Length: 165
Image (cartoon, rainbow, N blue to C red):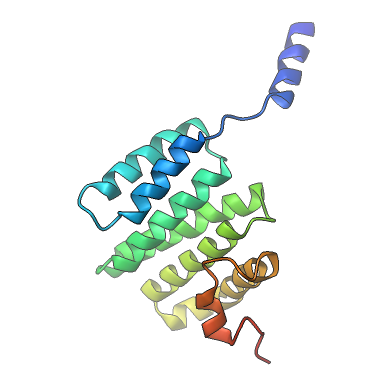
């Protein structure tokens, strides 16, 4: 019984495995070169391996969503765009639960909602209530860090981040 309690205490005290700075730098480097042949497959394989070892690592979650959003944006097939957009959204919803004060997953979740919405069509997206979810994530990102590099898109959409009435 004492051994079980000790093991449980160690699980609570010991931090979860996280991706190394080298892995994160490699993923960022691959992302900058994502249009080059083979880099997407390499990025996917590295993310899959690292997320298997650390499924709730925030740094891996938002980078995974970044890749999925980029793939969705380039998808010619609406079904593929829908699947990739939904995956990007869901990955970052996990990230928001892990670190709600961070801007990346707030933004990439919104981007995933946008990709999914484009794929299913505006009327269906509105019917699913996605406008509110999209705006909620972007508003959270703006509140966290209005100067985040991802947010100029939002400022252009709404005039420097101010809410329209």
